[in-house]
Image 1 (cartoon, rainbow over the protein chains, first blue to last red):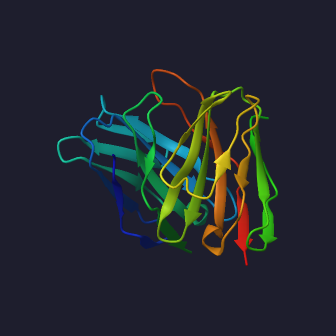
Image 2 (image 1 turned 90 degrees about the horizontal axis):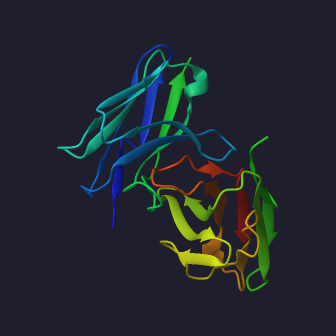
Image 3 (image 1 turned 90 degrees about the vertical axis):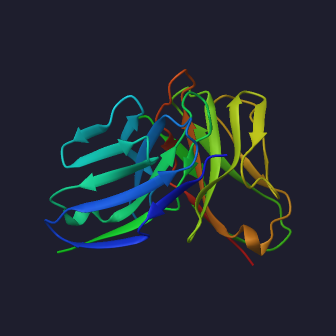
Length: 112
Length: 114
């Protein structure tokens, strides 16, 4: 089955700087790659996703890039703000109703 | 408001005392899942359901049961809880389809088994 790994496990950044979280996946048939944000005391919430027919997707300060050849995808957060402090999970799936495999999560801390 | 609700939010129980965590969604989603979240292990799927009366095991099903008698509800049952089931549990739901859809997560249930 699919195996998703995230690096680094914890990331501290100064407010205003950029943060990058990388994930690798093992199943070359995976074609759907979402990112979920989990704030303290809450359930994960989808913030952005990308499908394998595109290489990059942006939504305001966040962007996701996908490299299918190398089987990795990354979340980029620019101009970080304190409210970006959270745990971020990447995931991968073959799409449709196939199982979503989650990475172990990254703790991002934005230092004011 | 579209949401997934779970009850209770916090539960402390003793080994062997049967318990049920309820989950309900108001989005008419076909798919529902249960996950557990443990430090350093991320989110692991326990069970999932594709529709009413259709369920299947996820990655860590041992010690858990589920049922799907109504489309909106998907309770998680621990027949004989043990301390290694102390965890943070999330219910999630999503639409069925040819493309992948967003999973909506509940607020979580923190379970402690002593």
